[in-house]
Image (cartoon, rainbow, N blue to C red; front, side, top):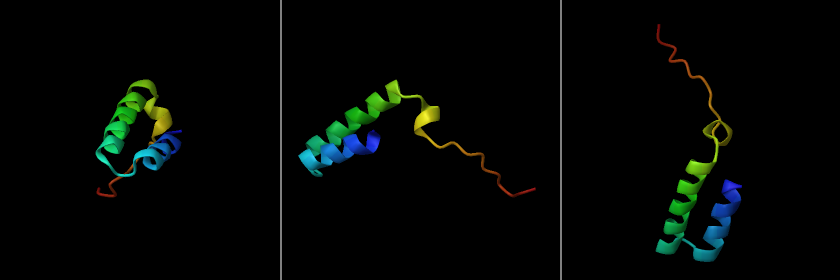
Length: 50
């Protein structure tokens, strides 16, 4: 969904200032509405340092 909306924004605005404003608004909307556990792949990372 996120990729699709950003692709549509690029097709409409290319890399113009309105594109970046639209992407900013998308990011805020996604951050507010979506569960972070579902939009990110969270993996445990070990440092390997003992």
